[in-house]
Every structure is written in C-alpha cells, then in structure tokens.
Length: 308
Ligand code: 13P
Image 1 (tube, helix red, strand yellow):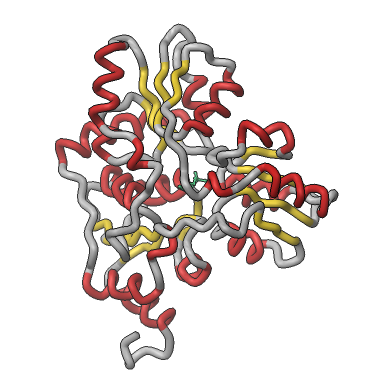
Image 2 (cartoon, protein in one colour):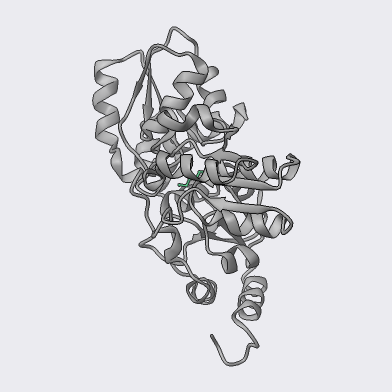
C-alpha cells in the first residue's frame, strides 16, 4: 500500500475515481474484494454490467474468460485483470479445433458454449450461455436441431434433463473445484441439519447423484436471490465457498454451511487487494481480444443476451 493512504480500501477508492474505473467482482472472489467492488455477481450479471458501463476502465476481478467476455462486449474500454495467471481449468478443457471438428461431422448442428470458454472457442460457437440461463438458451433452439453442449458435462446433463432434449451431445469437461463436492458429505450435512435448505450449483460433480435431493439447482446469483426470498434460516451451499461471504453479508441472521470447505478455486483467489490497487495504479494487466476474433465471439454472446 502507498503510504499516502490510510488503508488499501482508501487507495483503491481514490485510484478508481482518478481512473474513471468500475470494479466488477465474481461471487467467488475474496470477501475484501467483493466489499470494494461496484458490482458483485455471477457470470451473467457481470457481463451485463460490463456491457452497459459508461466508465473508461473495467477492472475484472474474476478469471480470464470473464475479462475476455467484457473486452468482447466493450471493445472501446480498457479491461484489466489484477492477475493475468487467473485462468479457468474448465475453460481449458475445450479447444476451437474440437468445435470445428464436430461441426464438420454435423454441418447442421448447433454448438452451445458455456460462458466458461475462451474467446477463440466462443468464436466457433452458435450460442453462449451461463449457469443461470443455459436451460432457456437450449430451449430456444429448434428441437429438430442436433446440439453439442461444451464444455461442462454436469451443467449439460442438468439442461438435457430439464429440456428433455434427445439430440444433445455433451462434452466431458468439468470444474475441478466443483468435483470436490461429494455426495456423501452432502448426505451427512443434510442429516445433521434437517431444517436446512440445500442449494446446488449445476457445475457440481455429484449433480447426477444428488440432484434429486436439492431444494434448488441455481447459479451463484440465483442462490443469492433464493436465500433472500426463502423463509428458511439455514442453508447448505454446494458451490465455491467465496459465495458464503456475500450470503452472510446480505443475511447475517441466517446460517450458511459449505457443502465442502475444500471447494476453493485457487484461480479465483489469485486476485487480492494489493494486486487490485496496482491494476488501477499502473493500468495493468490489459485483456484485449483482437477485433476480428471479438467480432465472431460477440455473436453467440449477443444471441444469449437477447434471450435472457
Ligand atoms: P455463475 O457465475 O454463472 O454462477 O457460475 C460460476 C462459474 O462458473 C465460475 O466458474
């Protein structure tokens, strides 16, 4: 921290003002980052906030594909990340050539990609989706079309079941953090907290085993909204543990139990307050998707935003 400031929070607030910047934080970010952000939310909400901001600089506290999405939607803005190494293992499980190969074999097929994909993968796809709108996006596609859903197998399984879609092929990617959440731990917690509601993210690796037990299967933002409306006092939360900060802050009177305290995404936690301050001070590290690629990758994102 620079010695002219009383706290790192002060420094970030001053630099943010001087840079005419907005700070967007994913629900999995560390609590202190969530607390200084202008918006904390899920992938969809953050993409929407990025798309409508009038600020010159967007500091994206999340992982790389999220900043790329902001750059695609706001080509004239400077999009920064506090740590360039903050990637996404799930996004890395699919490559543009995988999509091109599938399309060659299925020329009339439609490819739906989860937002957790690189810009170069999005550029090959027809529709994008997030965990909060995947069902709606797939339901909007004509039933006679063959679909490839990439890269998350568990979200794909959930959507396939909800839409009753037969001709839907699923890529076998997974989130290494969400697979740490095990069904036997959930069973144990449900027995210990019989009054708790059980909320589950569709990326959970135990989705196929525990889906029928969940009170709701929701995106992170869906969980925030659900808790707000529910009369329950206790919740078992099956997703990355960063969300607990937001839930507890919004509802100090309620109790939130992580389905697995080990479900911590090390990439999400690479950002910290010091790196955020340096991002604003030095305008680093810029994520800029080249125009030709951004123009192609924007299409599936805009199709999604038109549906939701
Ligand atoms: P949401 O932000 O859509 O809840 O999904 C979380 C996520 O996929 C981060 O990897």
